[in-house]
Image (tube, rainbow, N blue to C red; front, side, top):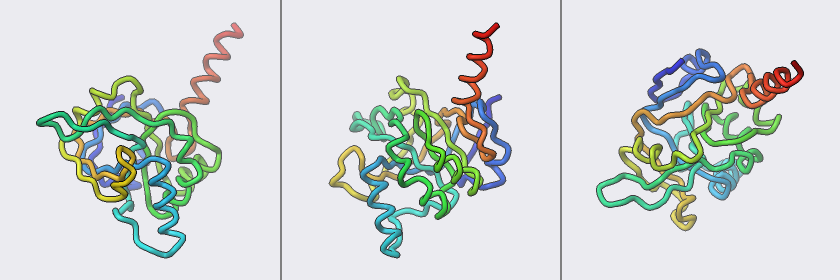
Length: 186
């Protein structure tokens, strides 16, 4: 089932999302990869403010390519998410509601998703140019020295993702694998 969501990503919006749902996200999201995540958590550890408001926010794990003339951003394919696992629970506990990436997540991240009524979306790997077309505006807001991995504020329209881990901890990767293994037993 395809659903449309406009940020902020509130608890109310998340509770209706189930694994396997195709979702089109519009509104403001942020980009950050592992180096930026380490700096964000360090700021929190020091009692300082983050360079963006993550309350009911979404972070997309991406290091986009430079924008072509007339475009807000270049290709924007998802980064493997497990590299953010050491930092994601802390950000979820601080109000982050959603993450976009690809690949499996740790038990600690899944527990934090459930505890905070969050959601993990997968973006389609190999569709970076298509995803980049959903970005209408991009603004570098922190850590310019990280280049492609700097934190950016994006305005997106109909960014295509799939719910992979829902707010109850249901995990499409696990359930899909289990269903496949059961079918092979027959």
